[in-house]
Image (tube, rainbow, N blue to C red; front, side):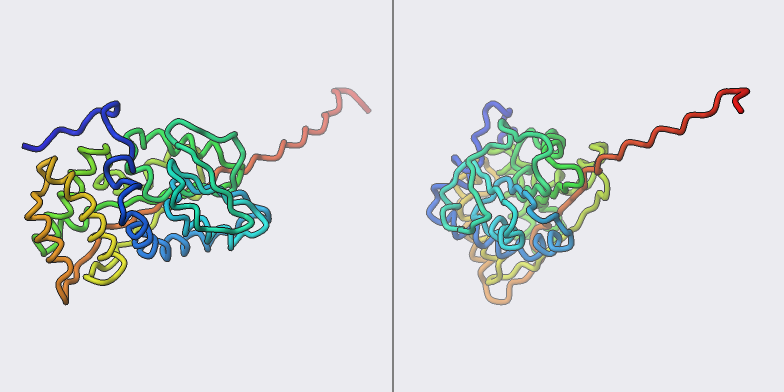
Amino acid sequence: MRKEPPTERELPAYGDEVLAFAHPAQMERLNALADLCDPATTGDLARWELPAGARCLEIGAGAGTLALWLARRHPEGEVTATDTDLRFLAGPRHPALRVLRHDVRTEGFPPDTFDLIVARSVLCHLPDRASLPGRMASWLKPGGRLYIEDPSFFPSASSPDPVVRRLGAAVTTTLATTLGSDVAAWARSFPAPLRGLGLGEVGMRVHCPTLTATNAAGRAWALSIADLLPAMARSGALGEAEGAEALAHLRRPGFVDTAHAMIAMWGVRPARRRPERQMARQPKAGAA
């Protein structure tokens, strides 16, 4: 019998028990995810010019590959890479890069601080995700850009491969019951979470990478599922034997399918309007 999703007060934090920072393969998994996601993310970010000396923030920086890319692109600025656990951010080094322990759920930044805020594969794992874009937008300078990217496993639901359908459903269910994550509907709702925040130029992008036995998506799937197998068995989403067979299926030569989707949304905080000039005084009636 499958467990009901726990209440927020019962949930462990991401990285504590599920997809744990202490897992021996966690760095390898984060690097595989970076190899999978960085080209599309940096392709988006490279389209937008930031001011000289731009201040950038990455929330949940993971292995730091994206923050390092930003620092190299804006060497005269400052890039702040945050996470609740900094062990994987010890490697990236750049004069423009600083690392900060920070929890976006409970800690903030002053208003008008950043020219760019990026959060990738973060909000989907936080039960209070719907309230966070508004908080993050308040930290932007006028003209600053908010960029949020999260996964959705909706492609696996329509896969012709029953093993992929089963794995996608098991991952979605397990993350929901253990962390309160939403890797089904949350990102699929983009860009609606940015509507009504007063942001301009709201847009979105969808990337559905190919899944094979040896590419970055395949490595990320295999490592993530291997990490999740105990939690899957406990929740009843996927038995250990079935999970092992599914992993072998993903690794067989010639395997190919569509991986999960990575969906991004963005918006720009409007620049402050210049004060309108006072209207010239009208001459009094009867004046010469």
